[in-house]
Length: 146
Image (tube, rainbow, N blue to C red; front, top):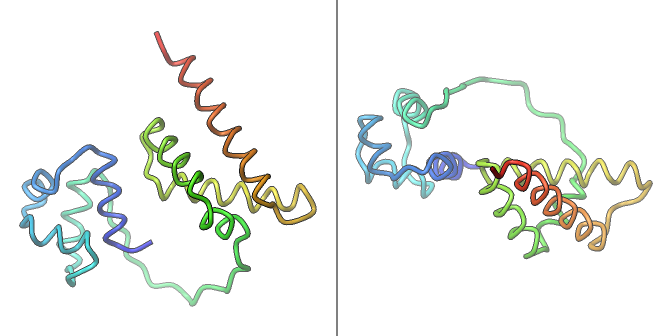
């Protein structure tokens, strides 16, 4: 995920405006807007201030080159599904989580399902999983209601 996407998702998940984050981070609104849109070259100091303003912490590291992972079956299924985007948005809002985090969980579940099925999941399997997730969320929100 790109830096701009992470910043925007965290800000929106917190229900914050760019202006409120800018004030807390001591940065300008155009600077943050540019970062969210994939432009600019932020300093580590600016990123640290943004992370703090968003209630997060900045992690910077240098690692070995990642080992090439096998292609994700789940990611391929999700990319061709408009319904999955709608369900992910619904779950993210209901659980106060970012869409990328929910999407990553759904992808991991689909990839794990391939092992359980002994075959690659297909669109029908994705549809069943999305139904199950919505049903589970509906049930858990009913138990949270007063």
